[in-house]
Picture (cartoon, rainbow, N blue to C red):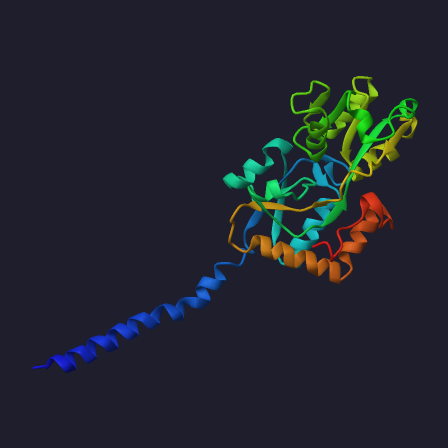
Length: 278
């Protein structure tokens, strides 16, 4: 018959052995934070933002798509790109209907409260575009205070116009996408358009007969684009995308893609986000 001292020693040994078991499962726990290379991840994008992301022959194309695609391939990740309205992208990601949102999304403190972002992959600013004949009357952002301005709803252009004219201003004309905002200007329904510089520059270059002029106001801050993920997502997908972005910067792929879409321009409105800005 065991005495109390012997029984206590046996129980202590059993307890210590049981406590040490979870340590053996540590490798499995860390593996759970690596993305699934057998899965195809869904990328939701508002493909109406040429040259960043737009539709061509029923396929999503553009600078942003090429950058994410290259970063993902460097990490052996498979992606499927789906076109969707911008206003629903954030809710889509947070509900799990898509894994990544791609739409030239400006990284802001407010958006960081509801989404997680990749490292920045592009730097831009806002730009005003208007008919050349109105140039003498539109020389700065302040000149839009009492004018009708078309924007894409819920974008940075919409937000800064709300700051200038007020959230309830009837002079702000909101559209589902930038092509409709540009059309409003061309048909005389708006005095100007405010939008991301990369998109405005591309539109002006593609429509030389429209006789358009542009202004970047000194008050417009630099904006950085990022890919968006569900807040708190912890399966390693965002980390893999960031690793991929670093990889394509280091091996020259990023520079090749940037030159494909923007030539060798590195300054001002269409500059890549620098390593320092990350």
